[in-house]
Image (cartoon, rainbow, N blue to C red; front, side):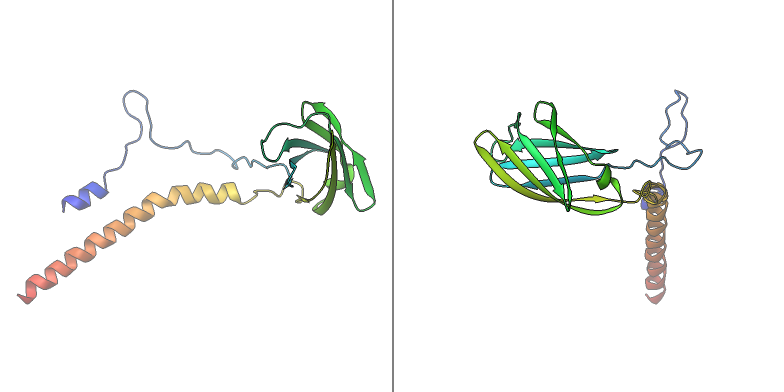
Length: 175
């Protein structure tokens, strides 16, 4: 029976010092954090990561082996008939206007990088989801999932204790 009491010991609500163990109750729908579409690719020479923010693709370019930033590179990005040249906005960070690539879908890209004596051709795919659709059900599902874990575990533990108690009674009756 001590096991039963240990399993039912829960952290209390508000204490006299105002400390609470319970999560705040949401008033409205949970805010949905949407991640910007991203791409990444690498070759023997370079690592490239791109993040779509609005109508601009921000590109971060590093050397593959050392992860050192690659400043002053010439970068061209192509997708079908569309082609654009990136401009360096800060050290080893480049920006490309990509208004045509903001439409939902998978956009295969060919990226040409020229940095000093090194040149490389890289392939990547930028996948853009429908506007506002990223993570729509995720927050609500996670909210209810978190709320049901402990009560569900307590119910299972209580059922296990009851099963052990019933079996104990049946065995004592047989003897």
